[in-house]
Image (cartoon, rainbow, N blue to C red; front, side, top):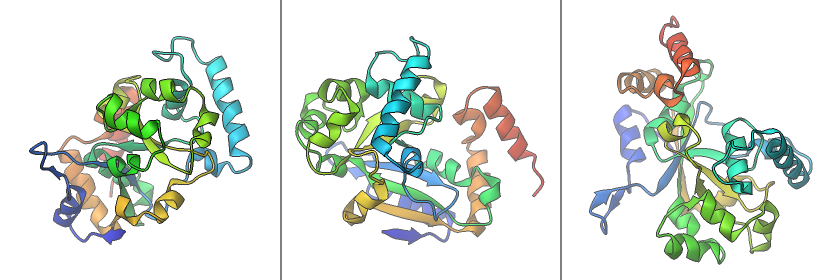
Length: 259
């Protein structure tokens, strides 16, 4: 479902809708959030956008990344840790970046000033409901074995050691995995990844037949500056989300850019 918001207030109402969990007595959303400066962008992964034989290309990309990266770059030597690290550093993979934080998603929807002439968006996907459609043994593991609602790379590695094994488990599916805390950027962005069972399966195609799992909030171009200014006031900026001199420089360059 696509919803075009008209104000900061309506945007918040939609971002936090359905977040009350009666069993917990807490507001805890089951949605993953993904912001985009261009509302026309779909949910194709960087690997899928390369076209061609995605499965063969993925195998070569991960193998060579694993070979040439530092041996101690991941906490545990597993395919899933290497895949997550590669995604974190710009390697084309089947993964897509998401966050548990609606404000982080809003940042990415309004960070690129070159896109302020067009509508932005925030995608919301209910990962709890998505995981109820997983094949066994994945569904049982995430629901019972760890008492978690998203996968850790360690658990996924125990259940499915190699990428190619995913597609042998059954029909197409999507799962959400929380990466190890490789650095402060992962932590500050409250990051998680979505993962499709086939490398050439775009997430938006899988979601198309499951409208109960998602919604897409469209942020009009004319609302972007208000959202951006209020995020800056709340300290949701590059300086926080990308700790270090690069993030600081990006924040200052945007902050002092004349309108």
